[in-house]
Amino acid sequence: LKRCYVSGSACEDLAAALVANKSLVRMDLSGNRLGLRGLKLLCEGLQLKICQLTAAACEDLASTLSVNQSLRELDLSLNDLGDPGVQLLCVGLSHPTCKLQTLRLDSCSLTAKACEPLSCILEVNQTLTELHLTNNALRDPGVRLLCKRLGHPGCKLRVLW
Image (tube, one colour):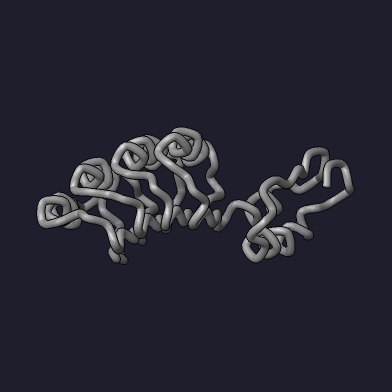
């Protein structure tokens, strides 16, 4: 779709198509006048569930989180990110320009080690209101780390799954 005179008004349909299409791996929208509204529509909900991502992908994702102010929801569930991946993600999540509201990390091979950087994020990230950690081996020590930060005045979390 490079230089196809696509405008921001088509981005709502493009975003819906990206969510529905499980086989599309690349889309080039270069040279189109998407504008800020179009970018926001495309970036509001980035669904990367079951994409065979590992910790190596998290460095690029962290960079995206630190510069993209439109991304509101990130679903990384069912990817083998592990604790090192979450450590990298938290670098982006701690950036003041990160506006992410919902982070889904269900079934990502996490342990209590991932809870240390995540708990720090609860203090500094002023927009994160939902954190999904279902089906990870956090155990008591990990949950305790998260609970310590839930009472912090900077913590805006409303949903913890």
